[in-house]
Amino acid sequence: MAIVKAIVREMPDGSSRRVYPFHLSLEGLEKAIICRDEVDYDILVKYVFLCALSKNVIIVTYVVVSNHLHVIMLAEDDIHAKDYGSEVRRRYAMWFSRKHHERIMYHDNCVDVRLLDTYWYIRNAIAYVFRNALDNGESIDTYPWSGYRAVFCGGKSRVWTRPVSSLTKRERESLFHTNEDISSCTWQINENGCLEPVSACDWQYAEAMFNNSQAFLLKIIGEVNVSQMQQELVDGPRVRMLDSEFFKMISSVSERWFSKPVSQLSITEKMRLIPYVSRTSNTSIPQLARGFGLEREKIAEIISRNR
Image (cartoon, rainbow, N blue to C red; front, top):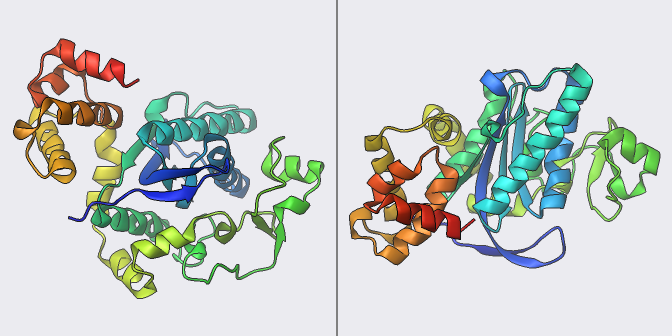
């Protein structure tokens, strides 16, 4: 499979950085409902983008459904991506707690981040994100809490919009529930005060992943193995794997990164791979030691050095 290469993008802070695509999933404890009405949906979508500003990542696309959130983002590395996910969880958990007087997301186990390191992976991840509308009984192209409406529309909104830069301080606080200065953002809101995705998503990146062909995107949406993507992007990362499954996983990553099995990796290559596996998998130092054939002390040293 072809490896996704880093691209240079202008970040929210104005700097130019080499970035990679990541998938974020966020859900409540025991898959609790996290959006109970349209206000909840609207606020969570807006936090997706407000947190992207503060954590310096770029949103490619997203979907919010009643009990979870998916985001495809561009970030410098998995540390920045995870930090972004934690900030979304923190801010929305505070909102939900104040409004509903319940705690549904109070630790980072509710958040998982995956590097989308092949074109097959990112295409199927984006298709899977859009498919969530179907799984919730909605149409993909009309579901209001998705970034699908940002792609293949020529960069133009299909409805009347108003620039966020024109909002008064009171309107900003009312609609976005923030005191942050967003006057320089190019975002647009519609007549209901909801954020229009085409004004905030990097839709050019999403379209490029499908060779700028809407027909190609629709083909992948129709063919995506939902169960497989659910396991790889949502369920699998939250469950501690058996050693046999763990070894298959790191072998697959090793083949993608270095085109050779784990057993043939040099110590330098293992030192590159171990921190990534540690941060993106539900694993332990003993399991890492068994999988990579190193002493536990060496694994601990490598992980500590990269924190």
